[in-house]
Image 1 (tube, helix red, strand yellow):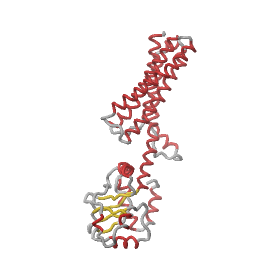
Image 2: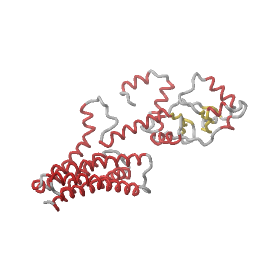
Image 3: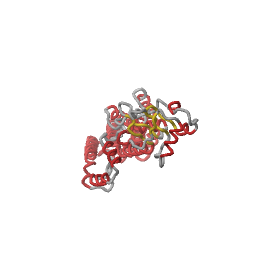
Image 4: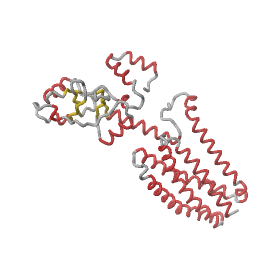
Length: 347
């Protein structure tokens, strides 16, 4: 999938017919599905065989396919009957029927299932390989831990890019114009949010003119809020991705993060308030600074939980552009809280 079309066609033309037909079949499945990730290297044995016959079949192979930890047992129509682990096969008396030691309820996957869901199942159940079957239960191929770890790696890479609105598919050395176009939407949104934040500051221009200290202190309030929000949003995205956060415990998680925001805001707000009061010889300015920081840290926790949860509720990737929205809200409302309190009590 990562090769240019011309190179891929050239490569396919030089493959053996059986492999080429397999690739064509696999490409009929949608991207990011199990069908795209499955391999045809599945060792299948009929359920009428004995253990001795199964071992003889294995010995005729030049080499076992990578990550082979089990054999797939099928009937004469290639419907999957179950699986037999290799260690069980070699420790069972040779004359015993294979059907006696078959695990008839293995974990299986359909080719149209999402690949990330299969990868999560591999991680959850410590699977090394697993059969892929069609709607009638016929064996189509198998999944291996190697391919599933690649799916998880790509998903982690995408999540690393998403908070900034970038695409994990962007070629680091690709054409400048194409890469620029991929970033337009989020940069445009960032420009709009920055303009809104500047207009909020503009509303309080009169207050800033009368008390210049406000201009030097307000970036601190916004910066601390943004950092706190990023910590919370990282926990929220991870919890949603792993299924640790759902509707049943969302409010509990939100309450905990708001409590942490209030506690940190009270501690560090008091520290910065004392510094501001000493620096500008104004206890009231220090109090405003402390209260603004406490409120903005609580707001940052609320946004850090709310944004990814709302994205997930709407069926979108919780990480997509979350840091852009977080920065906008903590900056804009942080400026509004601090300058608003200052206008009420200081000017």
